Length: 107
Image 1 (cartoon, rainbow, N blue to C red):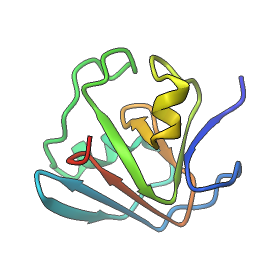
Image 2: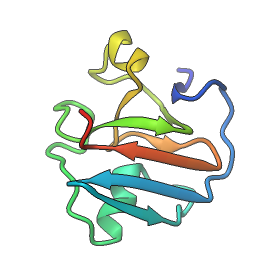
Image 3: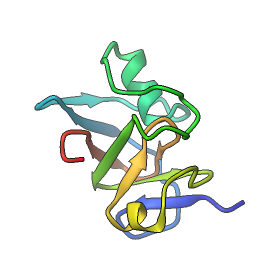
Image 4: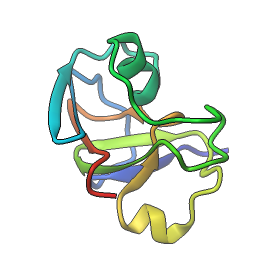
């Protein structure tokens, strides 16, 4: 299956240098390790991000891509409307641009 890209235009994966995440009105800037999901990156940094299933089936980890782009190997339970609104499941999403900004608070 082809990757599903969410966010800025493009369908290539570029090495991510910075991951910025807004959660509970606080912005965290993290270095991306090149292999983890957005949610795993947050949890590994000790940030208590929302999640439940880690399988892309519950939408508890839904975030909005404010800038940059992410990819998912599968849409899981997201709809085309979610993608159009730049919403992603952070438990499945991996950064695909130099800088990626995700906002949990805007959902």
